[in-house]
Length: 246
Image (cartoon, rainbow, N blue to C red; front, side, top):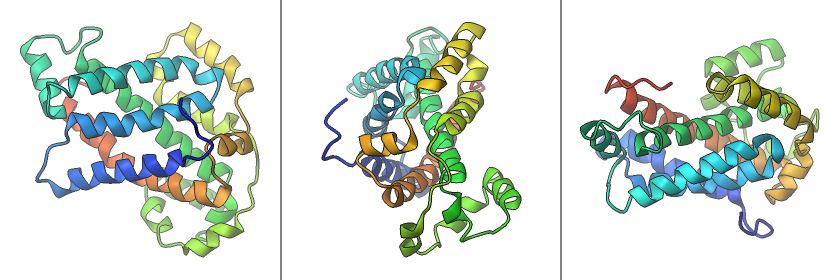
């Protein structure tokens, strides 16, 4: 998983996805497999930091990202990944690059939702600087309206964060239920549910990531904002070819 003692993995992740977001928003370039798989590989340590509950996700995610990295040696863009599998009639076959791309996308989405939930539940004192009404805040967050607005909160305010809780069970459970659970059978869902009780605390997670609360929320927000268009881009690649994303 690498040495996280002196590294800032959250910052590296955020910066990599900002670059992918910029490529997508330029509308002049296709997303290349190599930088995409590299950005995704930076997310891998996060699954390892979450412990046994997400061990299955870590193993699956790492393997799929590795497959895409290998594919980048002969395939230039994500569009080409799908088009080549369509030509070979292998899109829905296990182990195809297209299926692996879809699985990796779900991993990115799970982390995005996890970070959103951590910010809502663990750092809501900071968010109260923006809106005092928690119910309104949560509705705006879910609707997607708060993300751009939060960017205008002065960075100096991040130093005044007072976390309301130290458990990751709520955020992790919601992220799993929203992204992974619909694709898993009863046995896996049950095992994950049991593993939620072995999750690290928020403080333990931040220590593993070499972050404090103020720096973590900045990088989490950056990833949430940058990864959303990347995830949407991958979805559109599948949907525009009538392949579905299930």
